[in-house]
Length: 351
Ligand code: GLA
Image (cartoon, rainbow, N blue to C red):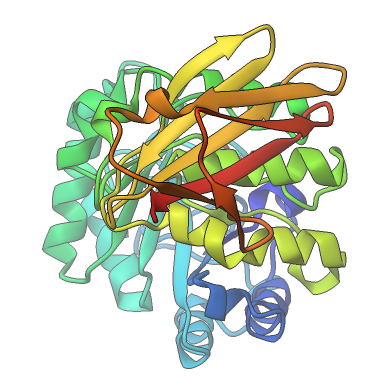
């Protein structure tokens, strides 16, 4: 869990933005809710490497340098992340790491970087698995415990090899701040649940919650779906100026608890009928998370049967994870009325 600059700020990153965001993580309660990593995405660089061949930060945007900035982030009880690219240039055209992986990994470690996102622009002729193997070994050799975020957009079926190399891997193209894009990212996850588990996660991409292109209901569904998918929760909005519904969504404790459940099982889609979907996820305490989604364009009822959860085991209690209250004992069937694009997130446990 953390924050990444890209979805909201694109190439307009700076030391000031990072520090203000780190402070906002604390003031808004997001750090306490579990958000830890502050990640600077593309375009933090000078346009060329220095004479020694090292990557250098843009001195106007990062006047005190990355090592200082990482220290400031650490001082706030947070962790610091940076972006690079496996190809010859980053997606924004800055110097990237092809052929310099060991050097760049050492540079990042010396700055105190805790999380490295490695992107896939300008990689003609490269294959996914061997390229990220080089990265995985370079980070290990650099001697600092670092999260490796693999970002080859699902091109080489990363779920099949990335668990051994990195901690999360993108499963598709860049998310957009639209409902269609959320559904596209969601549908790519249907077959991928067997590949996720503790320390190795499918990444349907960073959150768009609070960026303005969707309704609050849509953002709640986006967030709850990512929680069901055990997805990395990387906020991608301006944390310094959030609406209360946005803050409440991003910090919803029982939704985050489902995302972060220690069993680490990614949800399965149990049913999809005319826009009504049921997703289920087993949780460490023996309870089951059930998400009911109305993908359709008009309001409707979505439900599940008790038998969907397996053989009968005595009385079960349904809890609403958004409202944080029990809603009653589970009967033969449980149904809710949902507005278009809304969802219900339930936790079903033994009475
Ligand atoms: C690619 C990645 C994005 C972002 C941009 C930065 O598109 O998939 O997440 O890092 O590059 O240029």
